[in-house]
Each structure stands twice: as C-alpha cells, then as structure tokens.
Length: 552
Ligand SMILES: Nc1nc2c(c(=O)[nH]1)N[C@H]1C(S)=C(S)[C@@H](COP(=O)(O)O)O[C@H]1N2
Ligand SMILES: [Mo]
Image (cartoon, rainbow, N blue to C red; front, side, top):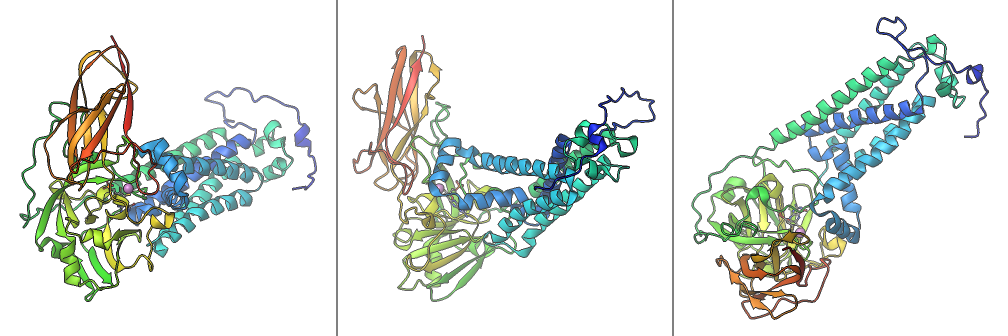
C-alpha cells in the first residue's frame, strides 16, 4: 500500500482490438495478459482443485478431515445454541447442506481474492491460499478425537491449490518475464495491448482451467466413491433374542397413506447429530469400555455383546430440537444388550449419578443414572429393524433409553460409558446450556391434511401420530376444528407405552378455510399442555394448529 509505481508506456499504448483469429492462424494467442477477472477465476479453479484433492485424500483416511467438512464441523461446534436452533428451525434437515454451502461460498470468495492478488505478485496470492487452508488444518486438528494425520488433507489442498494457481499463472503469462511490471501499473495489463512476446494464450488458459476443473470433479467424485465403498457395513444375523418383542401389529398407513408408517424404515429414519459426514467406524476393532466409578473396568467387543442375552424392543426416538408438528421423531425395533446387564457386570460405585457416554470421536452425551436404571429397557442397541445399525444411526452400536430425548440418551457410535457425577463431568449439549434431564413431552402430530395446501371438500381424513412415553402411553387423541369442542379420534394399534401411536379422524370438510388442532391425552388422563415452549432447553411444547384450505 502506498507504493507509487512508475507509469510505463504500456498504459498509454493505443487500444488495438485483436483481429479475429481463424483456425489456421499461427498466432493463436490473445495478446492481452489476462485481467483481474481471469485471475479471480484462477483462484477459484485452483482452490476447487485443492479442495477436491484434499477431499480425495481424506476419503482414504478420516473423511471428516476433508477441508470443507472440518471447517463446517468447527462452525457447528462454535455456533451458539440459539443460532443453531434458528438454523434447524429455518432450514430443517437442510441446515447442514446450507452450512457446507455457506462455508464453500465464503472460501470461494476468498479464493477469488487470492487469485486477483496473484496477478500482481504470485507469492502474495499463494500465501493467501495457504492461510486459507490453514483454517481447515486447525479445525481438523482441534476436533475431539483427531490425530495428527487429519492435517494431511489440508496440506494436500494447500500444495495442490498453490501448484494449480502457479500452473495457471504460468500458462497465462507464458513468454513474458515482464508482465508483472506491467500489471503493477494498475490497469495497464488489462486495458493495454501487450507485445506478442508477453501475450497470454487465452486458449491455453481456458484449456488449463477446464482440465483442472475436470480433475477437481473427478477427484471430488472419487473421494465420494471411496467413502461410499468404505461405508459398507458388516452384515450380522442376530441370534434369537432372549427377550423378544411381541409380534408387531399392522399399522394404518395402508389405509391412510399420508399417515407416518407405524415402523419407520431405516432409510427414512430422521437423523440428528453434530456430524457433517457419515462416520466410518469398523466393527472389527471396535470395543465398548465401561469405566469410571465401577468395581471392574470392562471392555466388550461386538461379538461379546452379541453373545450376551439380547433384548428386542419397539421404541420411539425423539429429538429435543423437534418443534411442535416437527419431523424429528420415529419408531423402530431395536435389538441389543440391556444397559443394566452391562452396568451390573462392571459394578457401579456409590458416587456416580451420571452415565457419560463417549462416541468414537470424543463427542459426549450425559444420561441420568437413576433414570437409565429405573427398570425401563435402556439398551446398547446393535440392530435396527432387523439389520445392523445404519452408519447414520450409530453403527456398530448406540445407546437407546426409552422416554428420554436423544440428546441425553441415544449416543451413536458409542465407545465408552463412564460412570461419573454431574459435578465432575459435563457433556457436549449440557456445556451448551441444554438441560441434563429431559423426558420426552407428550405430543400429537398432524400428518394429514398437509397445511397450506388446498384439499377438495367432502369426506376426508385428519390423521397422524402421537406419543406419551410412560405416563401410561397414549390413551386418546383429540381433534378440534375451528375452535369447536374436542372430538376423540380413532386410534391405530397399541404397540407399547414407549411407542408412538397412529390416529385418524374422519371429517366432512366444507368449503373454506379451517383451523385444525390435535392433542394427546396420556394413560393417566393428563391432557397435552397448550403452553408454548421452544425446544431449548428441554423440548418444545404446545398444541399443533393447522390452517387447511378446502376448495369446492
Ligand atoms: N455420537 C452422537 N450421538 C448422538 C448425537 C450426536 O450428535 N452424536 N445426536 C443425538 C441426538 S440429538 C438425537 S435426537 C439422536 C438421533 O438419532 P438418529 O439420528 O439415529 O435419529 O442421536 C443422538 N446421538
Ligand atoms: Mo436430538
């Protein structure tokens, strides 16, 4: 800054248009050295190439150490709770996509600036690229459970990015040793007509950029493929459980297709966690350790757990971030080992009041010990709906505690259970001010009719799912139309009192706008509260209200 640069004759050179080139023209060069815009493009292309190379390398090591994912994860961890809530509320399950997109957009803007800086002085632009890749390196290294190797993808990204930038710069300035002097005059290189020797091969630049973009796409795609191939799980045939679940009843989704299926298929099950990638934990080599305030520290392999008496249970899992009427809830059949069987083998000491579970990556979840051991079927689940857990849902093992929101109970990719106290240790979400004890609040959800969409008048069905874990389960679901009296809905089959229940209400819809609400009444006759609460800090409450437009 502040350096006054001498003007050169180039700046005042007459503006001659380059004559149109023909295919046979020997001088197939555009003689103007590329301008800022072109260099911004070089920055983008080089950065994309670097990021893609880093992504590919990461796919062979730890996919989460891929530069963009590492930065994204760091952003997630650093995001204050209210903003996270806002993102989940505003973007729903697309929140992660939007996060990664924003990170990428930010990176590309900086990459373009780095490219423009390169035009004047290569070292400056290159240095900026290196600084840019230092962020993911630091992010990857500071992640819980990271290894020094996690820095490699960022290093590769930096090296490939700078090399690509250099290559594009060289192609652009081929034959010119003085270009940078010209460029240093400011606008000169852009507006002026340079002698042929300084000319850049526009075709060379375009071809070079195109090749690099193609390489970036191939590397990015290959990285995805490698991760997918590595994502294959080891199939397991589960032995007959010592304590099987009763036969599963047929839901009413066959009659009313808009109502959620009684059992949600693994591929359709909601997913909520702090990760941007799908963790690749191997069943081979995986162990579960129980330590802390116990008589015997114990470690189990997957086979050890499979050899224990297994329990099979139908349990509805719910997320504390679920809004009234929201999608983060689902019922499935879980198979695994009773948590208290494991705790009994380890021998819990007298001080502990918290089960602190840790996942493969060091992420922690705390569960109240008294609740997890009060007789409910808390379990280390090894299977979901008859198959091993999908990677998204915790393969090879996770905790499930009926009646508690997932954030204080449902640790996926679990590797350690530490018996400790709330005074001594805190966990990921409680560090972010969420409550330590949060039973799932009873709620009815309307799945049909869809809100904000016109339905034809006449006979129709209002329906959905409802849950009131413990508290005697779902006794009734009631529907209210246009503020009139609450009417009892018909209930689907009763699975158990920790499982959701389908419901429907036949309605003769008259033309016009209507206001529809639904609420659950639990087994103790307790009516779902209509007091509105946000998800933070212990779960949303309130009665869902829907406006339905009925056409002619
Ligand atoms: N390791 C790990 N386990 C986790 C989480 C997480 O972020 N990391 N999220 C929890 C939350 S908030 C919920 S609601 C459930 C969701 O489980 P699902 O994704 O299988 O539906 O997992 C829980 N277990
Ligand atoms: Mo959650």
